[in-house]
Length: 131
Image (cartoon, rainbow, N blue to C red; front, top):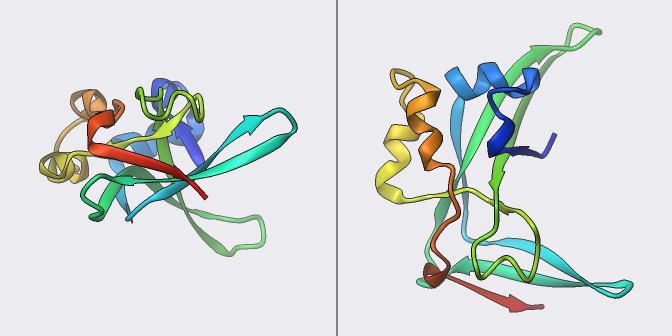
């Protein structure tokens, strides 16, 4: 699964253990989302206003397939959209504030204490443009 909804991480068996023990950062300098305009999808590129890199809140896991092969996976956590994203899509990836990244990654901090980080990034710090 490419995305995991922040609101249901603790309920979903596929994400519960990773949310507690296998949090990661997914590094990016932007992402793409499309807005439906009738039958057409208009793509947008979304970045931070300063153009710098950032980290999505992510989860990872490793598991054994029925054939015995180790499968490594990761997913990006999504949340409700901010004011910039709302006209484009009904979800957005969780972009962590840089000073909260060590907290997110800490295996010593329980998931209930980092759940508050899974909020929309401030719209005033982002820009979106059609491509």
